[in-house]
Length: 192
Length: 192
DNA sequence: ACCATATATGTAAGTCCTGACATATGGTAC
DNA sequence: GTACCATATGTCAGGACTTACATATATGGT
Image (cartoon, protein in one colour):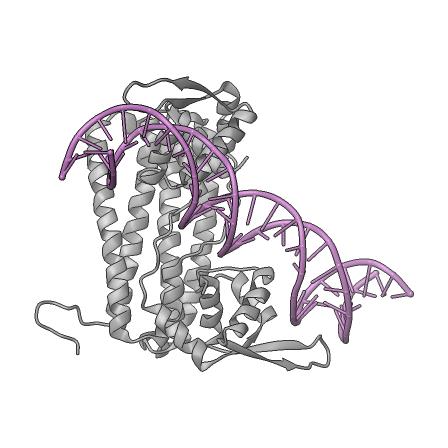
């Protein structure tokens, strides 16, 4: 089984979905640190069905094309449960921005500061979006997020991972931008 | 050009190295958030040479096989410099442990706590190794790490990224292990 | 003599993933 | 009418990466 397979099973364990729905879920990586395109999802669903981990039923729709709704089987649920508590194989971290930082000594300080400041902003924006979702979760799911047996708790847990990740990344970008460039471009302080 | 190509150029900009040396550098990801095996490095070196970004000279050795030492060219250095200050394409984050967390509501609390506690420990150990290197750097390179134009500074910057990453990851693992399992196995407290 | 290890350089098969190509239904805007 | 978009499902070519295969030199151990 591939990790993508477990990602799909993880979504289907919460609710039955079509390939199209799965694709939408895999795009918005909120609360879900994995992603895939439909070109990967459809063949994987076929494989999962071949292995007996999911089944599908065709749902006819009036105002849009028919769809295949996939449901997780008992066998699929068992496979998923077994996978969760197995230590993941450690994969090498590949981060292009950090790789750029490794050669930042060759670059112009001002230009480098601009790049790291911009990237830092992106992470701060993502952090803000996550914090917003967190506030909503803590407000609307008060019971769910305190019960480790509920899917709401699990969603909250991945969201916390996202928040910590973005916070750390943004902090590092700010520090590096400051260290290489110094001057922040407020109103009339042209660097030239 | 591939990112791997820039990774290699980034190393060669600091010192000339053989394919074997590059492979060793790419294994120990300390201060360097990228990795590659020799089976990727050798063909990439050939491509870089074909593009005129590196050149090699054969160095004969008495007590071991001869080697090809690669040197970055002016053209290679230019390409590298241009790449550093270009915003990196955003790639989806794929983290298998976080994906497991997304389905943790299905798992046994005790088993899940064990996994996340163990993974947390790994990150704490890596953090300790990084902190050790940091202490040595701050001690031995006092001038280098405060000069953004020195390779020492760049190494220090990537190390800081590593420290922040491991610290955040370990923190999250501890929190999650505590939330799903609670009881930490001290001496004689069998969970059965 | 034989074996393992470190050094040193390559190739090949297979997997995962991306981006592009491909097709079809029905609604809305012009 | 026609063009575009959202829905819906697929295939295919190619790139990046991993694992395994493959070869060669020299040292040190048994």
